[in-house]
Length: 376
Image (cartoon, rainbow, N blue to C red; front, side):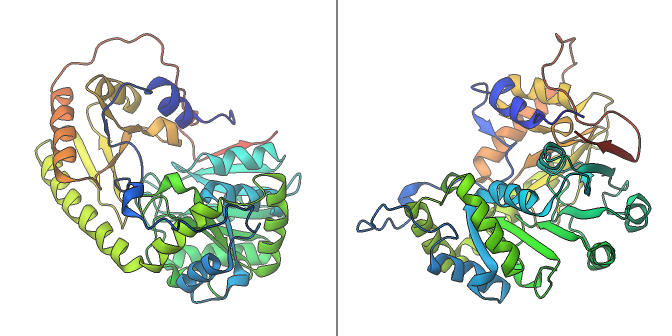
């Protein structure tokens, strides 16, 4: 398996400059700087490697814990990267899942870990028995995205408990990417010395441009990640951290806005999918701003998304996330924009696919099979 990102190639190369409606991203409608309170008197110094005390406290409050369990990072992506670098040793086994976030198989492989990528079950649940069967004595880390990007499915308590038991037996860890969780107080990481939670203000709050994320977990490992941060970004922007403080201090407002956008958008999407029973099947999302649409036309997701792109709409094909046969569509948009995007996709659904030149985007999924082993 290649460690390059098919998603990066799709978004920043294939699709760049070719769309005016973005239904392919995974966050709610992005906000503007004018909606935030900018502190004019802030000193633009280097800040702290672990983040400002106030921001760490606001993050920790969401878990019902103290600031020592939190480090602020340059988006959730850096939090995940730091954890991989601190936790993994050459030859360690990492188990992760597809479709899912490609970083979880790419970065551990670059660190010489032995990565096993398991297919999710047909209903996109985690088969804990299959994970146990794949586990070896060198199991160091299990990575779970919940709610899942791109399927929108939330891992259940029994699934997480089973995985937590497994890593405890091998002396390993469970890493939860919880970008789409509004209720971090119920995270399986709370009260555990072997479970980590990662999140940010990007997805639910609609502020990916702030690049403010965090990791939560055992203080000793969090401190080690903060030390390793000196080899990456040193610290976050103090301006962005100050803005994030204002956002997290007003979490209830943002949660209400999230509910408004996702509630209205999902109703519109459900009605639209119901008009195409012979072409689409909707997997009901479990608290995410996007949904997984299974194509039942026989056309590949990548081919379909290329045709939709010709209509000026960005979708995320399954091939960019280790899957097949489906697309991720973000419905957390203002009604007028979403309705226009769906109208354009309508026209594509009723048109006939044409032969294309070879596509530049390739799939990290080599085909049928329950597991793929990755090593470097």
